Amino acid sequence: MSSPRGSARLAEDRRRSISVGEHVLALLDGNFSRGLAGFSEDIVWHVAGGGEMGGEHRGREAVLALIGRLLVSPETRASISFRSLNEHEGYHFEWMEICADGESSATAYPIVSRTEAGRIREVWWCGRDISSF
Image (cartoon, rainbow, N blue to C red; front, side):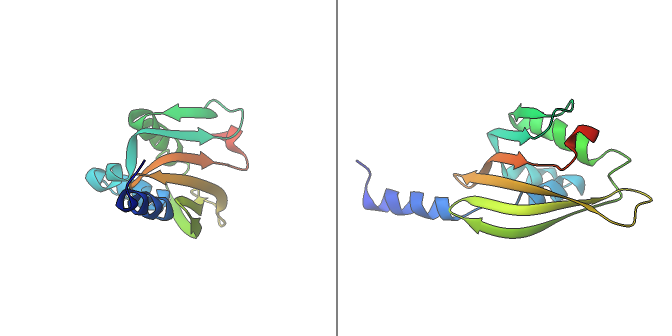
């Protein structure tokens, strides 16, 4: 049986969520200590779709490799932004917007993340046309 103080801390932890975008942008800006601080060691990043990057990416190293492949390629590096929509009991909902070189409008991808113990533990990236990556 947990103590009331432990229960309160767990309840508070569930209410807090962390923006994926904040940490991805820190990584892209070269601030690796800040960027990595938000991701759990055993993070799981789910990518929707049947493309070569679709499926689960487990662990911080696999997620960093995924971020590098998806977001740092010459086609997508032009403009990347995140817009937070909502958070609820440890879940964070946001849009990732990518405007590739030569394009006038951005493509928005919904992202849902789950925070546990003050770090992002799980991410679901639901790209519209993820098979193109």
